[in-house]
Each structure stands twice: as C-alpha cells, then as structure tokens.
Length: 157
Image (tube, rainbow, N blue to C red; front, top):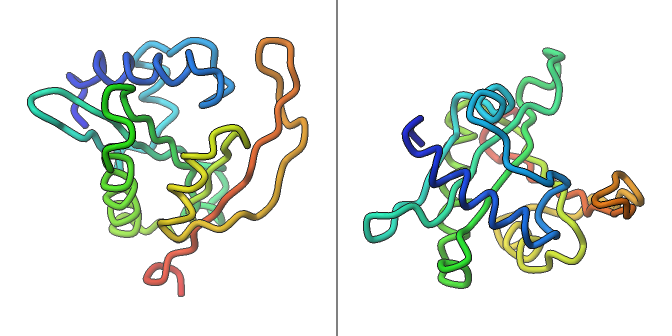
C-alpha cells in the first residue's frame, strides 16, 4: 500500500462501515489517524484491473515489548469484488508479510454476523478462541465479537 492509495482504501473502508457488521467504527478516519494506528509494514492492497479491490493491514495489540509479535488484522474487500477469492489471496499475502516481519500471532475480532469473514479466517488457519460478549457498542447497541487467532509455524517457535 502506498500513501497515494489512501482515497481508494478509505472508500472501501467506508463500504465496510456502512454494512454495520464490519467494524465498531462509524466513519472512516483521515489518513494521519489511520496511518498512526497501523503498523508501517504489512499494509497491502489488491489491485484488480487498474483499481484497488481490497486492502489489509495490521495494528499493534499493545505497546508492551512482550507483545511486539502480536498484531490485529484488518481486511476489507470492495463490494464489487466480494465472493471472487480476493479476500483469500489478500489474507494469505498478509500472513506471509506478517511472518516476514516477525509477527508470531495474528488476531481478529469479527462480529458473529460476518460469517464470510469468520469462514475466510478459519480457512487460513485462524481458530476461534471465544466470543467476547457485549465488548462494545455501535449505534447504541451492544455487540459481541468472535475472537480468532493464528499462531505462526515459523516465527516464535
């Protein structure tokens, strides 16, 4: 992902926000905020026929040194590109990129209603750790998230 990709990335993020089942966010942030909240490495976009069809990035789960190899996954696919295997290719590349940068655990918090995203993560080696009940509110409604994790077989073993 290049800085110049931000407008397309932000638009795809906005599409995900509008579904109501992708994130607790209710509006896409401006570039400086998004940039500051995501790791500098492992920022990927999927280019398809001259446009960006999806993106994936990692966020640190903690600033504590002991968690330096643990990151949270964000992955969003444009509505026009869903169901075409783009998510699988993007998440596969994100896993490889994360391992190349020393990440030993990836985690994802996904709304239970987002079955497609849960299934995608499970197909790529994530396991359900549990359900975090009423972990946060969106639009005044308490929401659960399914917590998934993937432990690297090459980093931190």
